[in-house]
Length: 190
Picture 1 (cartoon, rainbow, N blue to C red):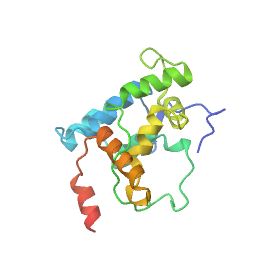
Picture 2 (picture 1 turned 90 degrees about the horizontal axis):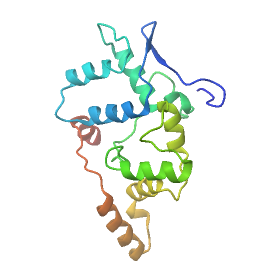
Picture 3 (picture 1 turned 45 degrees about the horizontal axis):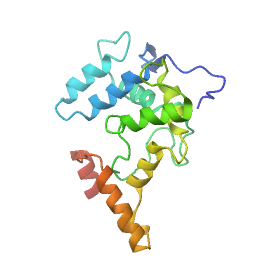
Picture 4 (picture 1 turned 120 degrees about the vertical axis):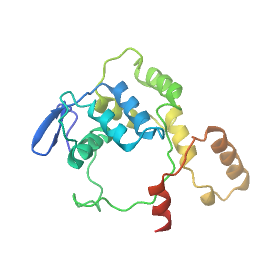
């Protein structure tokens, strides 16, 4: 874990004993997310496109390098390891529907950053991890946080039938398009 207050955000990722300079502009990582979720691209095409995020990509993209790029994307070093994470094996989690999408929620993201931080995301220069830090700190009354809260609300836990119906209606109105992958489907049944 790094301390964002005094340690610089990374400009590279480490894999296979090498350092690979990486693109850090936050807008490029929105494109990365879109690319990863693009069902029309094959895994090989995604690997080739992912290599484009490395300023000097190697000839061979290894599993360790792919993990390093995804760790950069998730800004893993900004958060402590979860309690049941031992560094070798990811904790098992059941697949969850997404609660936020950079593309579908873009207008709310633009508005929230302007409202709460005075930042125009269309013109500002910003490291991906700085963006992730600011995004994580948006207040509960921001449109982004409200949308995530509604989408993640467990209707079975809401006792009041009127409130449950209201939240179900809001969930339908702001639902994200979502298709489970084959891996997610098999995880549900295993």
